[in-house]
Amino acid sequence: MIPFSPPYIDESIIKEVTEALTSGWITTGPKTKALEKKVADYVGIQNVLCLNSATAGLELMLRWLGVGPNDEVIVPCYTYSATANVVMHCNAKLILVDVNENDFNINVENIAKAITSRTKVIMPVDFAGFPCDYEAINALVNNPEIKKLYTANNEQQKSLGRIMVLSDAAHSLGARYKGQLTGGLCDATVFSFHAVKNLTTAEGGALCLNLPAPFDNALIYRQLYIKSLHGQTKDALAKTQKGAWEYDIVEPGYKCNMPDIAAAIGLAQFEVYESKMLPERKRVFEAYQTAFEKDERLICPKFMDGTSVSSLHLYPLRIKGVTLEQRNAIIQRIFDKDVSVNVHFKPIPLLSYYAGIGYDLNHYPVSKKLWESEISLPVYAQLSESQVNEVINAVLSSI
Image 1 (cartoon, rainbow, N blue to C red):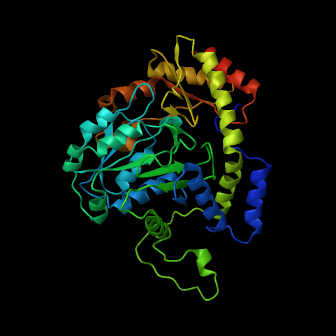
Image 2 (image 1 turned 90 degrees about the horizontal axis):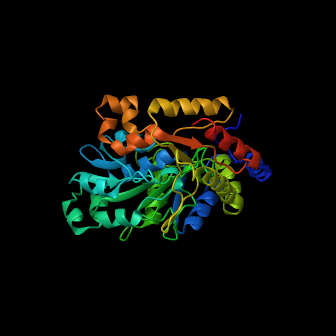
Image 3 (image 1 turned 180 degrees about the horizontal axis):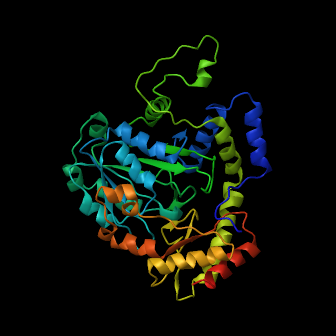
């Protein structure tokens, strides 16, 4: 069976993890700090906080901004549940909007229609690793008429003076928008390092801080670091220093720090991310494009244009004119040929919880159309040429 998305593990990664294991320090410490610096240097910003998940990064940022009851957060309908769940955790109102048909990303015109005086955050999602139109989104929140509509409820919101743009870039580490890497394209960006992502720490994520003046991103980093450790003023490593056992709890925080043993995986992967992992993903993508782009039954994914270059996280192939039942039958036939595929994603209104509180996929026709026709194919560096051909043959013989 060709697996869908196994993690990339080689001897250098095993060596880095072994070094962490034998160092005597496996929770948050020097390797986590090194990974934070590695991510910051890579994307070209100053302050990055590594956490136990991208979800934690999204929620910490909403909590820091003071998002709560009666506030609204705009999210694309076509995303994983985490993007919506963090809004619900804050007891805010989730405002779903439809997406673009050509790239699965949030539609900026739909964002504009959804903005009210209660809107506090827009959370664009870089679907499959292809960046959203950040220039248009940033221009929208800075539009004088939109800013005039904005209502601030606390000091952070007053200082920002407009809707925050918080990017769910779980898929897009290494993607580029107008020549700039994702991570510094808006107020804050969150990457995922989950086991199936391009770069993994088994579980984990990184929150990239890029708030404008008068904000001090280094100060915000320290505030969020404390919030990620139960509100504790010292982490475990700091408490091991001579005579430094004493600490305080300054708020009822959360427990979502990244341990060194996880960071070690990410540090080793970073060493080959640009030189090997991304080029190998591109090799697979290009083979798929060559095989599928002239087939009139298929719609190949957009992964580069004059503005953007994808991180090549997913290959979301679409089958023209199929019903949901036909798509599912195609998936089963592919599996029967020992090739694992997937679907990304079930749109939020299809999930039982969200359907139960009134969200209806029929209100989002583009998302419905995409969901019913999409199949995600395996993409990872370890796929051999023969395996890529097996996937291609399995797809073509199943539709």
